[in-house]
Image (cartoon, rainbow, N blue to C red; front, side, top):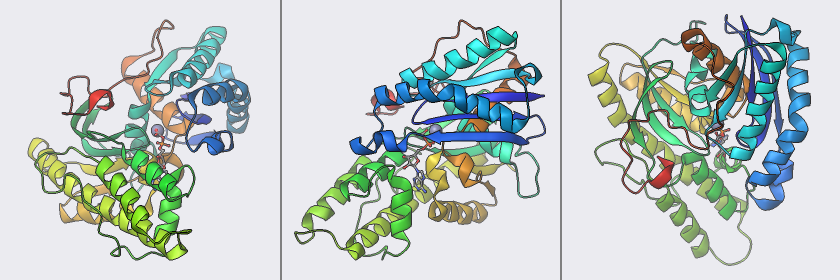
Length: 357
Ligand code: KG4
Ligand code: ZN
């Protein structure tokens, strides 16, 4: 069984082919970074147009590298949301067109579910599939959530952000420091040479009950800290120290919020499971190390996908499409792309969170 997955929900045009033995036969990711760089963030209309121009070639290259023909595919999966709707439409229409022309099933994949199931594709250190249930910290540019993953299509959200997503906090703080977009990798690189105790930054939500997050106050404090520095260009050590202090504050917050989540998870699912991290921010080595230590302290295994599977890619979409297809079959070609698509539609909205929850 082999599946083609197409990802176009943000600023990567990506396609990949995976098989049911969890082998990634190809994984093509075309970043639009240069197109968006002058604007300091992703411009939805530019993204949609760039996806239209690139998607055919990216799919063709993924099929070529996998040594597969459309007739070999068991189904065609595409991110159906949530995301920038212009881009999502491009991927969904491409997948539907291939499905229709080749008389193959079409599967619409929730982008968050694709991140959530990636650890099952990459597997444990000994190469086994990560078993359900597990506790998932999903940290990306658009989301920051804690979920109990009970199975394919079955997610219980136990915490979310009431304001910014974590990746957004990295990106906005980096922008304030003049580091460019995307900020996460830049902050991580600068932090390596910094003093993480120089700037006292807040740890929003630390010590509170529950598993909600908040990051806008942290970003504001980064701005205030920069304003208080001597006028003139920032020195390299100012930037390195601020990045390191920011990253440490984030690590402290994640540790605190995940400690509460682990207690809830272990009460509901005693004696089983692992802590899994997913989404673009999961590429951060410092945060991965902090979470590894935390999981061990609570007797949980820890799994993080390899870095190239943390940021957006087609392999995670193909894999989630494969798992979904195996369990629930195909989606109707009348599927409508969804700008919003919560993993847990029954979760109560977080107070003040607005549409982000
Ligand atoms: O999952 P992703 O590729 O796209 C979304 O679905 O949002 O996540 C992108 C986010 C960006 O905010 C980026 O700054 C952040 O992930 N990111 C990182 C790192 N690499 C990417 N944040 C912290 N450290 C990193 N190494
Ligand atoms: Zn993503």
